[in-house]
Figure 1 (tube, rainbow, N blue to C red):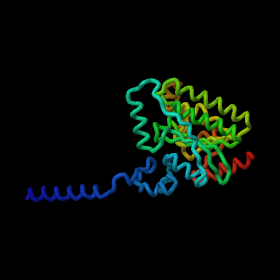
Figure 2 (figure 1 turned 90 degrees about the vertical axis):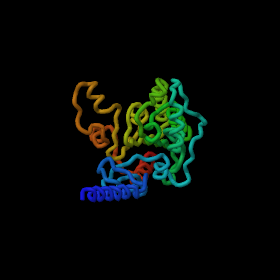
Figure 3 (figure 1 turned 180 degrees about the horizontal axis):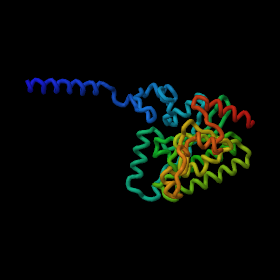
Figure 4 (figure 1 turned 90 degrees about the horizontal axis):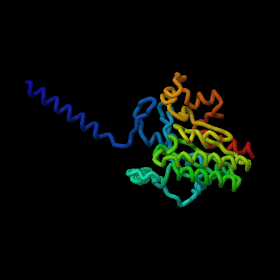
Length: 279
């Protein structure tokens, strides 16, 4: 009788394993907010927003451009520059190559021109999937070039930021991009051109400390985390406790750091209206 019970348990276990295998691999994801398992295609069709709780997932550059730019109008700037390895790190070049194959992107930002409801703009979109959107030499150069083109062509500039900060694999040269992008924005301001900065989750480090915070108008997506360093690092540095959620878009709106929180479905029309007001 004991043997029969053991056999029954083995059969039950085998059935459970088979049930798990029947679920397609890679077609589902877990929401970080509500912890529900959701179908990837459903999330994609819902502007990368969880259908259960409204949590915002991060967006690929291509998907973001589809959401903001009129169909068939985006023209990417081709600068013919490549990522270098100034510190001679052994695995850095391999990592960049692997990320390009995985994401289909050349770097952590794409810059070019396109139309928003018929209004031509210069637009830069960063992607967290490429080394957490970190700003290295190429990212800094592309954004600087885009800023210069906005000034030269007298076009509004839109930058969607998502980043962990400067790219430490490129050492102090990555930090220099903060000064370079900031200097370019000064020239854009002198030219009288509009710059709208859109902060998405997360925007941190040297990107926050440079071009992301210098928009004439600063927008943010709901619940985006925005700051320079993480809460624990800041608390250890200043020796004080910080208020809960002090780096959320909602807290920063309340304290005047950003101008408006805009839901993803309303971003295109909001940016268009701001361009019209500026004109």
